[in-house]
Image (cartoon, rainbow, N blue to C red; front, side, top):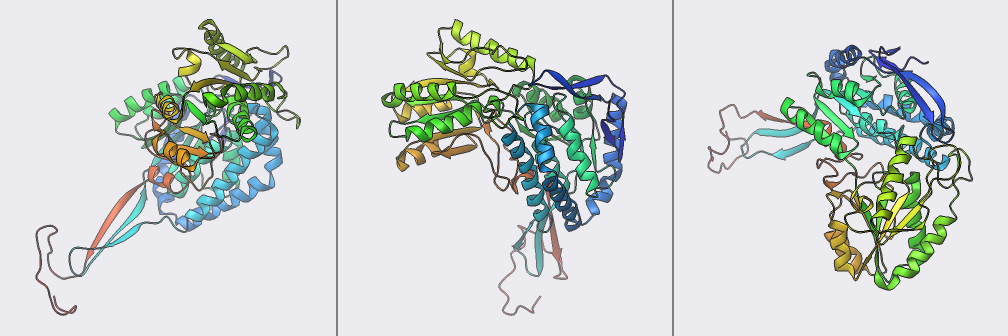
Length: 496
């Protein structure tokens, strides 16, 4: 049992129940932590509130130095952290390395922003008057992160919040709590003052509710399911809290007749089965033009059959386990519903006979539109092939979902590519590349039910974690009334 909650600069045992962190490949305990009590959530928020004014006044370039040191420590420990990511969450080791590298990239990026945090200046409509705007922190941020990027998403939320001058209380998923602790440990080691970044563990219905309802929390940053996000949005709106959400997707890849078949198959494999399908940007619908449909389905099925299941830490593994047996149960239920509805599994559709939370990479065809696999975010190694006559129908099918996070098209026609980029309703769009993969310096987020319109990563995230303060400095020596006084032209700049 480790002291799992970090409050006001101290690691403390939780007063709540035990959290068993399971290695999903072996179905064995990986670590044991304790959940926080509601009283400990209160203490964590109080610690963040107590130091908020001091941290806000701490110069942003000095904050940046802490983030830079954190990036250096992450780089030094990358391989050890990557192995822990793979063991805890199940993703293959290369993706574990990618999880840690994303955190490194984010830390370096926001360290750079600490010497910018750009505001704006503008000419005033009045004479002898300076007008400018600067960013100001919002206050205490509740950051709630999911299981699928256990190291990167805590960084994705905390780092822009911290560089903007906010304090943070982090609550990670109880399925992958250890890597969030590793992130907090590194931030403290880098010189972050006590109370600026706190972490509490526990179930959403107790710890999460206490945190998001807390009157001293000013902003809630949440990544997770649409249903939970809407619940948080409802009570947060009533309580006057700011929000930034990422709520998943039902992502598609459009494959036109002129696509490079080999390239497309490789990309779809990665987009559908990378991270065992447990990404918000995973491609669970492949919309294929009828001329290439049969050839594409056969090639994709052959490639999927060749994928190797195994422990994520094994370099030979292509597809690791799902995060838990419960997650595997959900995937099995979605596939069963599709087959009962008239669909067929071209490959997969089964749990392998081995320990762990595994499910075979599965390609479904002939599923009706009302099937769960066609409508829901699956979060598993399952994709559905849908036939389309041409680009117009493909775009209409792509948009036939409440989500709008990520989409892609494979084609040799730039006209088709640009038309799809204009018409497909997603926040992320790829041409001749899969639906997954983002870079720290570019905005990430979705349209429609996939989010709240704000973006994560890049300078765009600073808009979520800061607010504008506009300042007017009038040195004219007289009262000037905006939109009312229209002074006559004065010949000399020295005249008042």
